[in-house]
Amino acid sequence: EEDLTPLRAQPFAEGQVRAYAEAGVVAQLDECRIDWCRIEADGNAGWVPKTTVWGVDPWELRE
Image (cartoon, rainbow, N blue to C red; front, side):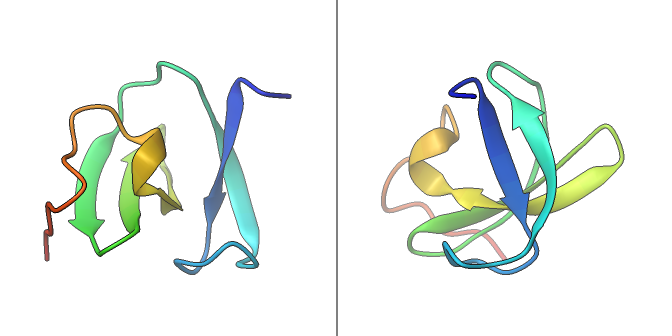
């Protein structure tokens, strides 16, 4: 479904899906790389494309 974003185990499109986050979910932002951010929501953590995270600038990096 379009309102679900997969949380991946690794920061790439082929990474194993750990869970799904609903559109609009409030998540904790962990690490951000060039194209991916690691988030945690409801006890589930994983990598999502940076473009799916509201409030993160394209050039923003976090360790």
